[in-house]
Image (cartoon, rainbow, N blue to C red; front, side, top):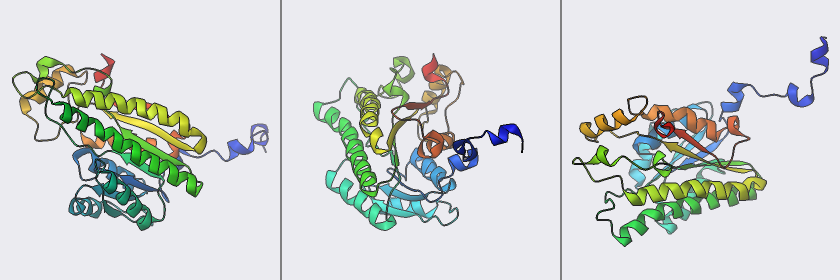
Length: 276
């Protein structure tokens, strides 16, 4: 036996491989907004990594459609639940349904979002407050996940969806004469989600519950104006927009043991936008 092999500690001998660190086999994830443009890609990523996925949507039909197209790895099983994170009764009912269907959850991806088109010029107080209620839903679901993990005496990973616009302002001239400005209430919401992530992470670390934020940059859906896309590309160091599959590695990293010593952090996938 070589000398360096004899001196290896037990921990070193048990070191996980990269493949093992990113493997989600045996884990179950609940993702809100799973039928959406980015939510669908993240749900597929979790399934491709081996997780059983509970796809949720405000409409059960859309949740079922999202779950039906997810790939299966090993013994994974996928499910669908109706869950509106903007409605507290629906939120709790959806979470309980997910637990009943699976027997236990290990991962929560707070991705669902109720949008707002009104910008700073015409947004009302009620609309502004309604937009911030997205954060209330994220918190309530995260707390359910934390309490569930503690009850099971298991670790858990919670992923909040932020945005580059929770970190920086937008360029007014990118939107001028094309569409309303990037909504001020949205910027306020996403900045708050970053702080929510940090706050919960430090309180729940002792419970083996990790809380991190994933902040996408420009990932416009196909319906967005081509002229707006061109203007945004000019502002990006990579001179292009992101595509949904480019979030897949990040969400698996945050959900898996590959990020086991990471909590309270914000992972930004933005093509370099916030590096300017």
